[in-house]
Length: 242
Image (cartoon, rainbow, N blue to C red; front, side):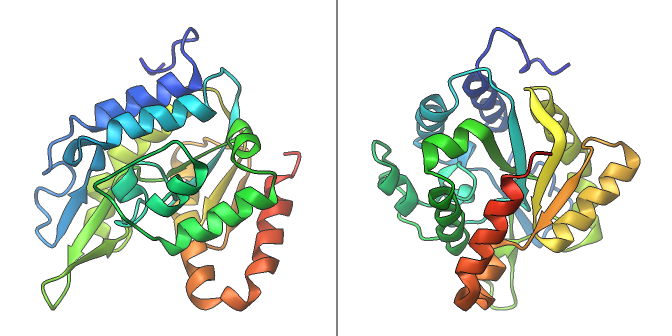
């Protein structure tokens, strides 16, 4: 059992403990031998992030209730890769009230969609009482493109990156499940992300069911005219009984 899974700790305390551990990771962790890639670790790189994470999770997760897990791919540089809170950019933080991150001003399309779903389900208080969002790989990656710019990368973009991240992915999945995650069902965002979780499931089953939903970024970028229909799809899926 994970050291973060003490029955005396609230869900919030377990999340905060994990992120405090992530802050100790070396910048070369996972990508030391993969020069095109760079690891994003806001918990280490920005001293404002851990206090923000603590305030956020203590507001919404200060209980011992089980929650259903929603897994993105890995944090992007304008969302969780900047704020430390998955699918939450600085604009959404400001809208929630009471949270400040002076060093970050960000807008992430995925965050726009996720918080539209949260509102459709009844708002942040209700949503976070029932669901916990993270990513299959809880730290994100940047890749240097042909112009020399650093852009978002996914853990599955190259097989070498996935293999380097695989033990880290397993470790963090198992840690989070130990917190009391409801393993009857897991929601995965993005079709390719779902394929990779199913690959891991074949090695060691973690969830009884995996439900794959279209990724919020894809919806916002390519299907925004159908956004309301996708919100209803998410709502129906997340309200399933198991």
